[in-house]
Amino acid sequence: MAGSPYASALGRFKALQPTLLTKDAVSALARAKDLSDILKLLEPTVYGPELVRAGATYRGTAVLEVAINHVFVRRQRLLIEAASFAGKPVMRAYLRRWDIENIGLILSAKAEGRPVSETES
Image (cartoon, rainbow, N blue to C red; front, side):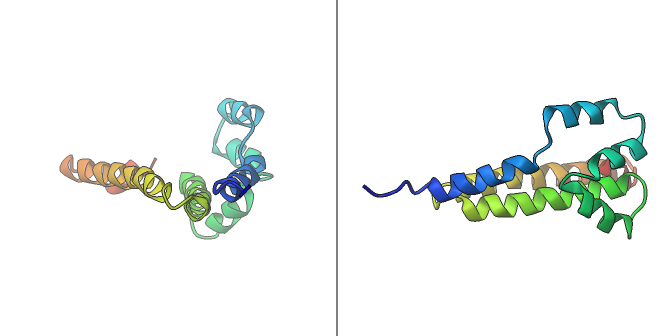
């Protein structure tokens, strides 16, 4: 009996699970008083190294946004690589949704005469 074609992908997906924030961590983030508290709570997580790297170039909420985006992109690459041949188009379609949403935010900001930086939060 041959193994499931999804066994490898499932293993990769499960390997990501310990790096996801727990319910307690999310609750603590929701109770955080300010950006500084949020950054401290995220330091011991998978976001920590990205926060350090982003902090070398960016300030304020941009540090958090860049770190989150880097982790998101890295995870999505792993998931696309692990997906079965039939699953890759679904993953790509899901990611395209984010591109479309971001382009919409940029266009609406420009149409309203607001700086694009306002759409980044």
